[in-house]
Length: 121
Image 1 (tube, one colour):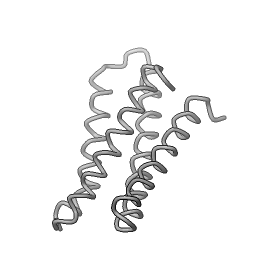
Image 2 (cartoon, one colour):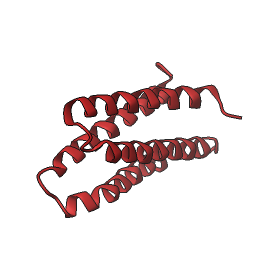
Image 3 (cartoon, one colour):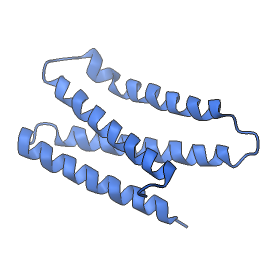
């Protein structure tokens, strides 16, 4: 069964994706919409996976905080690997893709923080 916090997380993510796509379409046109959508799907799946992994590991009695830190560092490395093809074949127009990626990354990081602290989610 899907819990309430997962539904809130995905619904706020969906609203964020739509807002990002609408603003990108308004300012940039159809230039990067598919790429932005791919980035959001990747980051949403990464956020859900790391959230699930953190939940499973914190249920154990002797969980070290270093394991949770390692999960977050692993998430950063996976994001760099995702951006690697853009970075390797860098052109001037690609800087906007990198800006959009970091905007989306920090959006999901902020949602993760809110859901962890149970402030808003």
